[in-house]
Structures are given as C-alpha cells and as structure tokens.
Amino acid sequence: MPDEPEIIHPLARKPANEPDYTNYTPPPPVPWSERLNRMRRIWPIWTLIAVNVAVFILGGISDKDIMRQALAGGNMPARVREMGEFWRLLTAMFLHGGFIHLGFNMLSLFNIGALVEMMLGHRRFLTVYFLSGLGGSLMSVMLSEYRGVSVGASGAIFGLIGVVISIFYQHRKKLSSAGREIWRTLIFSALLTLGIGIIPGSIIDNWGHLGGFLVGLALGYVIQWPQSLAPMPSSDDASSSMSESSDK
Image 1 (cartoon, rainbow, N blue to C red):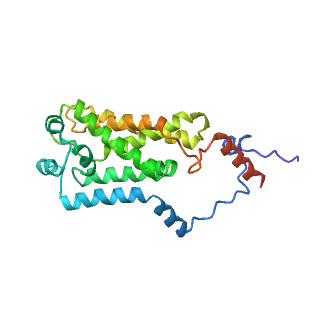
Image 2: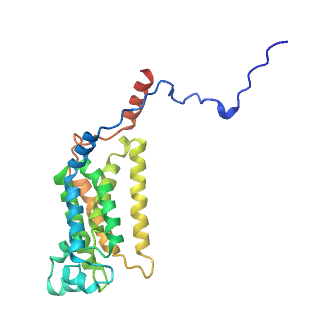
Image 3: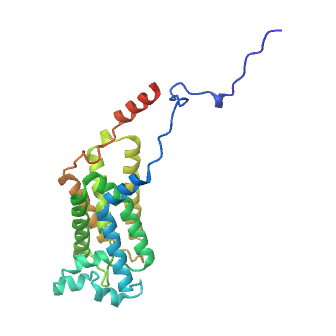
C-alpha cells in the first residue's frame, strides 16, 4: 500500500516571504551599568521632574487651591495683559493642580522627553522645552477667555511632541516601521488631547496646549538635527540588518 501524502494544515504553512528565525539568537540583556549610564545621560529630564515635584510638595497646591495657585505664580491672562505680570508665563510651567495632574505630566515628560533628548541633545531639548512652554502660556494669555488660573507643564510637553512630529515628517521617507508607528501615535495623542479640551465644560487650557504644540512644530524646522546623536532608523537599514542576521 503506497504511503499516504503528509497533510499540512494551511495555517501551519510558512509563508514564502517570512524570514527564517531558526538560527536567530536574541541579543544579550543590557548590563545594569549601561542602564545607569543611559539614565544619567538624560539628566535634564530628571532635573525638570525633580523641580516640578519639589515645587508641588513645598507648595502643597491642589486642584481646589485656586488662590494659592495664583499667589504661587499661575498663569492669569487678565493679570498678565492688564498688569504686565509676564513672569507668570514661566512660573506657571512648574505648578500643577493636583497629584494626578503632576503625575501624568511627569510621566509624559519622561517618555517623550527621553526621545527628544536622545535626538537633539541637552541644549536643544531644553530650548524646545522652555520656548514651547512660554509659547503655550503666551497664546493662552492672548486668546483664552478663561478668567481663572492656568498651571502645568503641558504646553512644554506638547512642544516636545510637536518637534518630534515635525522632524519625523521631514524625514518620513527614511522612517522605519517603528518610526512611523511612533509618528502616528504622537499625532493621535495630540489630536485626542486637543479634542478633549474642546468638550463643553472642560477646564483644560487648550490654547496653552496648542501654543506649545505649534512652537514645537516650528522649532522642528529651525533646529538642526545632529543625527550623530540618534541616527534616523531607515527602512533600508532595517531590511539590511534583517538580511545580515539571516545570513549568519
């Protein structure tokens, strides 16, 4: 009796264009010494986080302490316009209305800030951060009809998002799939947050967010990106590295 042919389930068949991972060796774990060096390299981010947390603890400001936020230096459009208290444009960046507000902003600063710092270096990162924060505060003063107090580092963080979106757009043809995913995620996050800010009854300072975002977008075209700090991962590089790993 002839041997029956082996039956292979269609889902078990390996696609013709799928890379061969038979001899793939995972990279070794990153030593703790290298991890600590990476953390030390982003010292501007740790400094900003420490200052924001220290101001929050020492000031004891909560989301209900409107008077204390105003006295501490919160951005008050009416007082800035009518009394020339422009120092509020800067001090408001280090104040937060509650633990959740502080925690969310510091987490965002760490995540997106580490990417920007890696791409641009210390000085350019700090330039984008402070110019975006000041730009967001200024747009809030010029266009906001809110008569209360605006606080938070959100404008500066939106500037960091904007500069990454701007740089990635200029190099969009060289982006790898991971880079394009980061680009789309940042665009979605920015649009989602801005959309929440226009919901009736929202107390989010959308003008501050939008101002910081626009400053970041503009700076992405002005600031030269030193690719020696973080070279752009191109699609060609990704494909060549895959072919090299399969040949080994």
